Image (cartoon, rainbow over all chains, first blue to last red; front, side):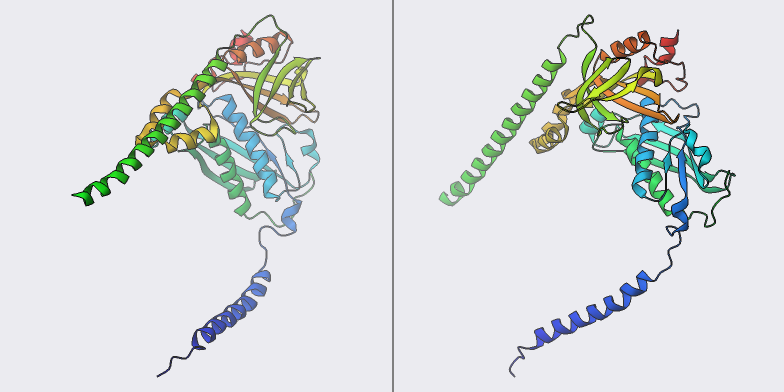
Length: 184
Length: 195
């Protein structure tokens, strides 16, 4: 019996058609999904980042500043907030829908870049903080412990960047209150 | 008999080539470390006007992280200037705290790390033992015109952090005793300055 040379072509064509139909059905359905947390209402929120509270833990000032500055950068990158305000900014009083982000250090294990480079396994810098995002009237939106570590490559301060990135990711996923807050 | 010899020779050549390659990388890395340490040995003249080479790690507005430039004090402001670009200034009167710390870093950055990874027989790890350098980190806490808190971190050659801190204290920067969480890295914090 002579093998049908058209068979592979037919199979490929069928597969293409099936994929095209699947995409045609799936993509509009995905686009029509209701946007829960990043809808228009969330765009009205602004956030004020409070300076890091070491809570009695011996954390170098450079680390505290690095966490604070990296948090501001990472929150701006999320594009979820109308304004990202600094601690002490007088303009915050006039912002109607303001969230406040507090960061308290829970654990800190200073590492060593040289130890990491020599042993690979030892010398990790580990940093755990408690992040609390709340409205001005005290309604808590996010309240959890988040960590940022450096295990292999990079300097110790990189832990603060990783930590800030994780906090920003958590905030990005957290559902913000739909209704706007009252004007102060 | 011949077959065995033919099989061994390319293997020997390959091994020799690997050894030569590894030795070459080792020499290159040793040279990099030696040149880095030679730079380290440059003496700081305390009488010279305060201007020092620094690396901006983060915090200054409109300056990228890990940027090399010159940190100076002039006209009542701390200025960081990247070569050939206008400087970014912070008024000394707005500085709320100056903290000096110390950190040890591996020299050479990513190229060095890749080089060390390429050294055979774990030689890169041995090099890592000697290829680190101590730096001073200076953290400046300051406020903007709206009262917003800022922080900037600079990496300086060892010993220069203290010089900068003393100069800022002399220029009446607000060096406040707010170092509650002083660590070993922050051995010369502002608390001592206030005393």
